[in-house]
Amino acid sequence: MAKNRKAQSGAVRLVPLIKAIVICSLIGGAAVGYVVQKNRIFELGQQLREREARLERLKWENKVRAAQFAELQFPQRLAARVQELRLGLAPARPAQMIWLTEPGSVRPTNQIPAMFVQRTR
Image (cartoon, rainbow, N blue to C red; front, side, top):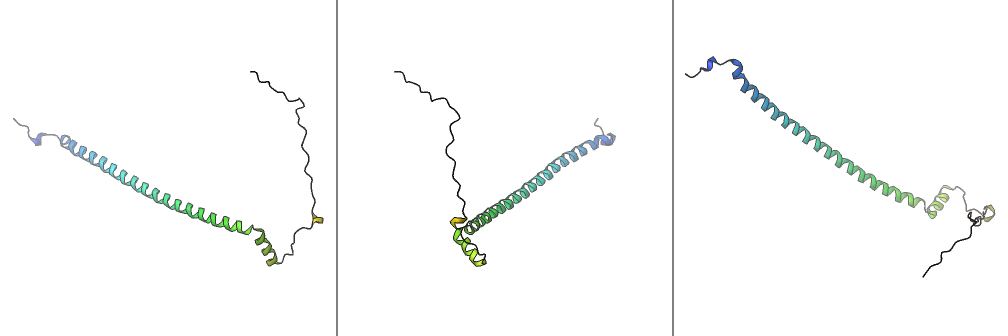
């Protein structure tokens, strides 16, 4: 004779429901984790693009400022700026210069005469 469902305990009927809830929560949790990770990857990509753009802009500004600096170092530009500011600067006269002589070559520290090797045939 077939058993009646009403005769089964409540715990037996509850097991499939708990299995379904656990499986659904695992799948849902994995899906939420996937979406969170994809969102984080997208945000990091945006930050990377922003920082690369900023780096390129700073490199360009650096080149512009290097060119300006090089232009300001030209002797003609400096002389024009001195005259413009009326600083009264002039090139040094020979009498104002001190000339230093360069010392001669120093004797070698090794006093042993050079040795030669004879080639054998």
